[in-house]
Image (tube, rainbow, N blue to C red):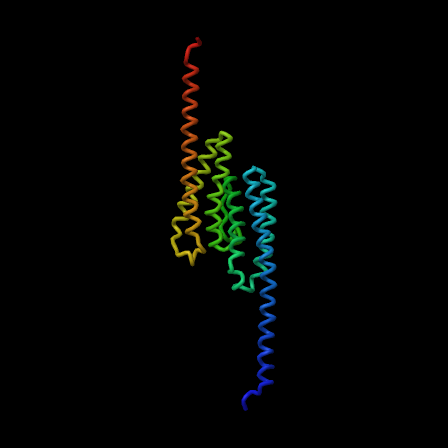
Length: 219
């Protein structure tokens, strides 16, 4: 016998109610993950600023806050891949990776891989590109402090990051837009190399003038 109208409505109501409960759980996970991701981004930015201030304790503290928030977001969204890949979690992972990698590069510490950082490989790659770009600020601070050797080392680290990322040649759909980040890094690297070159030349000229002035006889 065909399903009567009342029975059909009941069947549909049962199915839709089940779907509604599933969507409600996904929505709750999204709200938790979104709020936690925002905390990740804020704490990661604070960690990077502390690195530039050479405040390693504050940098580590903020990085710890970012990691705890990231794990909360990842845990909340683990069962909901459609929500997890909406974009905000990947942004949070990228920001956290950037903070971790910036601190390691500045300190001359070993570079942790994506598994050690606890992020997706694509997020780690974009975090590396952003960290290499972020080194420009630290490098300029070292130049202003007259620390040319440190600046050269940071420029070399930027070069290493850029050269390494060029090896990853896949469509943006696979790398989550990595090419755009690498293009941005190239522009930052070119400006930074020009700044270092100008500073080195000016420093050499100043030293030459000082040596010549020392050789001149007193009048």
